[in-house]
Structure formats: structure tokens, C-alpha cells
Amino acid sequence: MRYCLLILLYVAFLPAAAIELPDIGISANTVMSPADEQKLGENFIRQLRRQVFVIEDAQINNYINALGNRLASYSNKPEQKFNFFVIKDSSINAFAVPGGFVGIHSGLILKTHSESELASVVAHEISHVTQRHIARMIADSKRFSLPAMAVLIAAVLMAGAGNPEVGQAAAAAVMAGNVQMQINFTRTHETEADHIGMQILAKAGFEAHDMPSFFERLQAAGRYHQGVPDFLRTHPVTTDRIAEARVRAEKYPRQQKKDTPLYHLMKAKLLILTADNKHSLKKKLEKMLKTGRYRDERAIRYALALTLLATQQGDAVQTQIDWLFKNDADRIIYHLLKANLALLQNKFVKAMQVYEQALQAYPGDKMLGISYAEKLLQNNIAQKAKAVLLKIPSSSNPYYYHLLAKAYQATGAIATAHLTLANSYHLMGQTKLALEQIKLARQQQNRNSYLTSRIETRYKELTTQLLEEKMVSKY
Ligand SMILES: [Zn+2]
Image 1: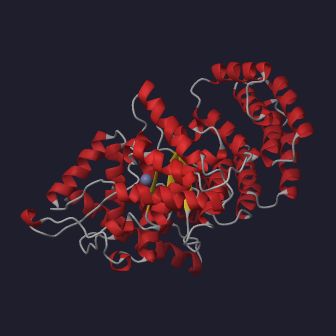
Image 2: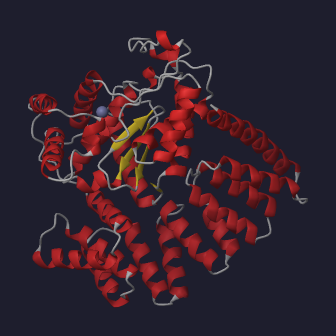
Image 3: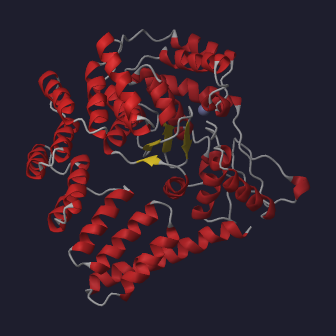
């Protein structure tokens, strides 16, 4: 990735003349415990959310986590926890950080021609994590706490991602703190990630040959178009490496693997989320349907329905909904289309019925619940919105807490509203704003001892964390 696959973050306390590279052969556990890795990863994603657009759409999240976890279950470390997320960024890139946090750019997903191609990149990133390529390179640092380390890693990534301000801040922190930090990738790690990634890919039933094919296509695209894709720059793919992967893939039989419908439907959603011009997208989709040039008809019709909703063409949306319900399985996303169409047509009661019925069929579903609660809150039906949100299993989605805080606020639970909004800010990496909400919660009079203790615990946690994060910027 322009962010690299491999972040070599080496914090040294040696005099400048004696700086040595970390010993890669060092026992991983002496560097960082798995629990610390997890904490680092969680802090990292919060920092990342502050700086880039992490897509929180439940359809996309569910898909990428299902795909990633399926692949991970075939790794040599099935107990490793993973968290996959998609970043709204048109560049072709992906990256992994300790704790099993794997980010994939929307640009890369949209560039894939098959689910196995996407799976090949995800499997490669999973291998960087299970082989602890990154964790092993983070030499033990007594100087930085984990939250501080997360800030630094995010800053280094952003420096590469064309955010010069953050990059300079990171550089200054590194210089002033006598910290040796570099981004690097080694050929050995890349080859190992390809090798192990391909084993995972094949074991999970995907097409191993799609790994070299995808890399090759990216390399060719770089040669004729806008330069080398970021993924290849950060995980340098040489002609040799592609050739090696080809030889390795020959060991596996061709799978004739068909893509799942969810892969195409997820790509359709991503296309809408990242399209700047819905009108031209609509024309493109209509043309595809007319000429039959598509891989999955239902995905094109689903994308078209979403585009028509965005451009407020209700009758045409209905045509697509009818086709989808008639020709495909029952899917939550189609019920959402129905509810949104009813709202577009100002049929509020009908929309509420659609949500209620769908929630009966799919109780506690996050995608449905969040969408329903959003509409309820827009219409000042806060009590119901709160009930719907509280039925969703625990979430690390900042928007979920944002809605829940609104519902608490509107139902008079002010202290709880501030506490909940603090959660939302915290997940967004806005520790200072989160702490301000906790201070507001402390000023509220009406609270029982349980709530008071939750507020005080959070106050302590966030105060400590903010101090640790600030330490970084002092260097
Ligand atoms: Zn790599």
C-alpha cells in the first residue's frame, strides 16, 4: 500500500551513531504480547477514523468481515482475532496492523474482477498478521505507551497517504524524540505473505491462480495508465514474484469457483457510496443492463435501484424492487430499498411497517436497526428508536452511538446521552471531545450510583488516554 503492508516502526534509544536495525529473528513475544497488539490495533483504528473515511456501512462491513474471517479460519493461527474494514479511497491499496486490523481501500475492491482476486489480497494481509511481520518489527519501547504508538503508526501511514501535514508532524515527532522510525518492506516478508496467503486462499476454496493474475493485471495497468498502483509500491511486486506465485499456484487444481452473490451486491453498494455523480452512474448502469454486459444482473439492478433512489425516481425504483423480490432470495438490503422508497413517496406509515416486518424476520439486525432508528429519530419518535437500537448486539460503530445518544437526549436521559456520545467520539479518535462529553455528564444531577461510577471510570480512562496521546505531539 502507499501505506505499506509492512510498517517498520523501530523505536530506538541508542545514540545516533549506533542505530541498529531490529533483529527480525527476535522472539515475537519479547516484543509485544498479543493483548498489547490488540490494544494497539484498537487505538490505531480510532486514530485512523479521525484521518480517513472508514466506511461504516453495515452491508459492506458484514461482507468484508465474513470473507476475512472465513479466510482467517484456514490460517495457521485460527484463534487470532481479526477486524476488517473498508476505507473510502480510490487508490488501490490494503494494509494490516498488529492486533489483526486489516484495511482495504474501496479502489482495490472495485478493481477486482472476481471474489478470489479480492480474497487473495485479504489472505496476503492476513498472513502479514499471523506471521507477526509488523509486531515483530516494533521493538520493545518503554518510551511510548500503546495509545501513543497508535498515533505514531497512524501518522506514518498518513504521511504516505498524501497528508503532508500529519506526515510532517510525525517526522518532527520522530526527529525530536530521537526515535528511529522507518517504513519498510522486505522481500522475504512479501514472499512469505504470498506463499502463506495462497495456502489460505486455496484451503478456503478460492481460486489460487487469481492471486498472480490480479497482481499481474495491476502491474500491467500501472504500465499503461496512471503509474504503479499503491498496493504494488507498498508490497513491491516484481515480475519475479509474480512468476513465483504462478509456479506455486500450479500446485492447486483450478476451482472453477463462482463468486457469491454477496460479493457483487457489496461491490454495487460500494460503487454507489463512492460515485461522485449519481446521474452518470445511472446512465452507465442502464446501458449495462440493456447490452447485457455485466457479471451479475441482480447486483446491477440493486445498484440501479440505489441510484434511482438517490436521484428521486420512485416509479423506476419500484420496477427494480419488483424484479429483485421476484428473481432473487429474500435479502435485508431489498427490504431497506422498499422502506426508503416508501419514505421517498412520503408514505411514512408504510415505511415503518416495512421496517417492523423486516425486523421480525431478522431480529436485532444492525443494518435494519440503524436505518430504522435514524428514520424514527428524524420524526421525533425517540423512545421507539432507543428500544430498536438497544436490541442491536454490542457495536464498535461510532454512528450507532451517535444515534443512541440522540435517543437518550430526546427521552430526557441527559447524563447517559453525554456518556454515549463520548463513546462515539472516542471511537472516532476524538479523545478530547469525548472527555468534554464526560465532563458534561458529571455536571448532571439526576444519576444513580451505577451511572455515576460508569461516568467516573470513563473519566479516568479518557484523562489518561488523552495525556498519553498528547505526549506524542510534544516530541
Ligand atoms: Zn505484503
